[in-house]
Image (tube, rainbow, N blue to C red; front, side, top):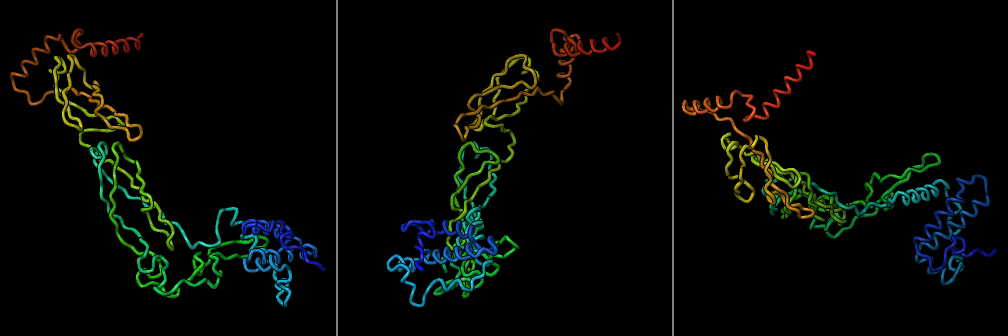
Length: 378
């Protein structure tokens, strides 16, 4: 009986890549597997043909021999079909099913190279540093690739051995009825290899605990909860894989004078009631020194004065915020007799605390109170 061409069995071209061959095999094997076609002899024979074709074409050496000599390459007592006389359908099916689920979820059957974890460093800075920017040096605990074994974990002159339980795959499959559960190998913990002679420096981990110093540039305009990322400065990967990133989490300390809201700064400036009434000029602080602020006459407590361009420069669009000064009229204390007499005479000139001309806000308030109680008695 003439055997069918292996490429035709899998439905791929002779120039097909390994990925195409695997994809075609999985699709056909799932369709014709005996576990899914119990009692169907034709499906069983078809599955044997598919598996035979796959094991030849997926092996580079066998595929080269087949391309050169055809089926004759395996006729000298080396027929690959002999392989299938004692196969167990459940084991074959679990391999296929496990591969399919691995492809669906983007997983791999080995975890030999694993990217390092990202790290976070909490940094507290002054408001002045956040506004103007600064350079900080930090010292962080980290795991670095072992310089003795270069991350392999094995003693110098030796190499890790393939795991005997999972045969280097890093994963094992457990049959649960119709389904197959794939999990990390308990012997090698998903690495696919076992270190028989561990490195004396890192004790087989491939990484050692250490501290490293980093210089971090804090850009002008950062605020609390902003994060600065330092690429590849996190935990190093396993077996020489890529390192993770380091995130510097910013917290701005509370300032004794200024409060920040987005790109604006706020501060309270106390003035006495004489200046509030007559007006004048005072000096107010900014992060760049003092500036003069003109107080108009009859200024009320709580009034906001805006000094443009004295706030924070945005880290995103470089827009400069403003400084807003809230004046608070302060009641004088520790008055001497002369000052008390002057205030007493001043108060008499107001004709009581409800003076219409001198205290318009008080007049509006008490007029409103009077109307409220008048309405209640109607």
